[in-house]
Image (cartoon, rainbow, N blue to C red):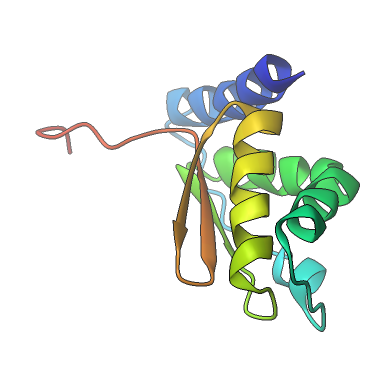
Length: 117
């Protein structure tokens, strides 16, 4: 399943890049998912990802279609353990690179290539 999700998001990104006339902009709705949620403990973070994976993946596809290389999610009401659980669960479920910086999780499907503009 992780390989399918990874391919779905990366394919959306590649198709968007190939369409030089596509200039989509769309605000992210992912913050609504995290609003007013308080989670503590690694297992709670894993459960949150498993419960909301379809919505997270759809948001990633939407961002990829806008030629964005990643999706940032702010988990301010989540404890350190819950964020770590989310990081691992996202990595396992999507096959994509996940970075955790403070309360922000970043799901990455494309990396910038140095020297290309």
